[in-house]
Image 1 (cartoon, rainbow, N blue to C red):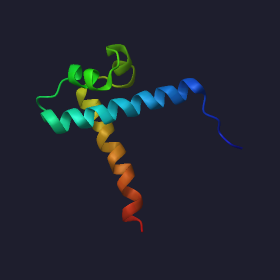
Image 2: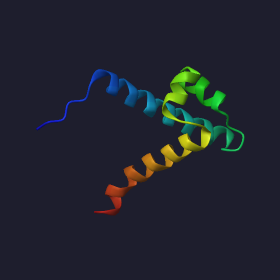
Image 3: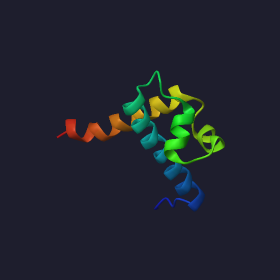
Length: 79
């Protein structure tokens, strides 16, 4: 049976990816210590509520970024 993804779930996933991509840019530009949630919000063009719906704080979004990067590397190591 194929699992269907609802439109709200798709939008939530897209927003989460946008936050992580934006955080990656901000961390690269400012460094983790100098980067702020406000910087990420501005880069992503999203509301504070959207950010906090997905992540509790800057540290959590950084973990999400590392997790996503780790997932993208795994297939390369399995070849």
